[in-house]
Image (cartoon, rainbow, N blue to C red; front, side, top):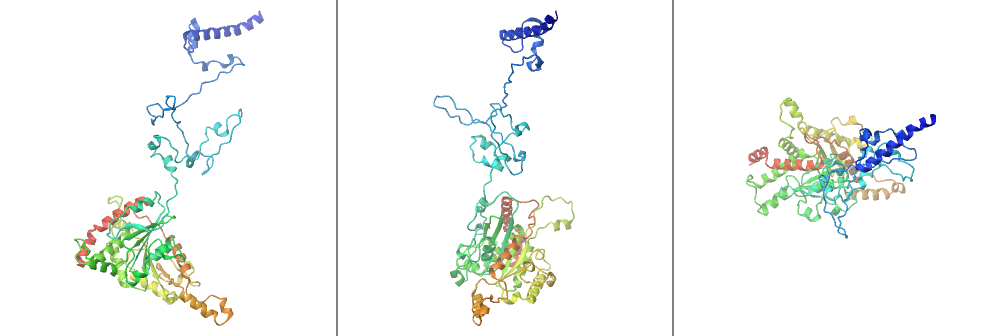
Length: 508
């Protein structure tokens, strides 16, 4: 009796399973048994049964579940028909995780080959899936789905193309004072940029200096400079090389703007001799030339971080009057809102003014004397005392070790003044010959110049310009492309400025 009593539950359970499976085959519905009272109990899913009843030799395998979008939401590319006439299968949908899920920052996760039967990898056990790095899937054809993901941030991260390198400058404003859009293709959507402009009279060397601090070296041929310099023929007939405003951007994302000479007599002579028609708001040619110069200066004071004022002799009082006039006619900085939340003093303090650097080109040897240097700084400080332009405190020749032995306290009022010696080396060759003619000892010593070399000063000037503060130009942080649109709007506003029109009427 004990053996039969122990064996009956097992036999009874096996009979129930046979009858239930026979009922499933007869009815065609899983889990439904038509054999009497056990139908209600067998209606529930099979996963909820006690697994202890299953025989140990048989393992039930679950059917894999595939999650996919409904057919209506999928992009329907043009289906290619195979040779047999059946439509080709659609391309699989690839799900790519972001870089934040990687194990190491900046390093794509690596996948190791798994041997059969070795089990899931460590990343699969933790719930992660090995993915390819984002930059490796660029330019892969995804059919019509590629256009639909144009606004996807992951797609935007794949555009890791190096910016195109410029070889020569291009026009930002042509000789007719019209805005040009050709510079837009060289700009990117990034905010770390520096805008440097230049002003100066005719023949002071503006284009040469801008080429040397941007992309060229003094040893190169001037015909290969990014900004075209004056040829010998133009120098002989006292002409000008630059017209309008030229644009150049370096790989370090520094924008350089070279302008035509201000108050240029050659441009005035060309305007008179060629019988060019003046705009209706101008009556005299010299008034039109002066207003052109003021428009370019007011434009640079609004869209540049640094403005270099080049002069080849010290000093022209009319130059300082011109700078103060352009500052007075400068358009106001656009504000985010016109709400009167702050006082008038706060609104006035929000007005933008650039850093200005006075560059003394073709400086003589006497200009490098410490006493003369101190007098030059004092004169510039008194001339610009009432100006809002940032003309002091951001550039120093004493920090460049150009005057060894002079401390910072030697210059009581140190302004942004930089001295650049002449580029020709005829004096250096004469000094070398004079020093090596008397004794062999002098042939081992360099000739005394009394000033640093031109190449060393240009290198120090470049480093000082690139280290200038990059203040915020408007109420929002501008990218390169946003700066271009902002500058175009400022140029249009300068040309239509009522203050400039009123000043032109007073000059006439």
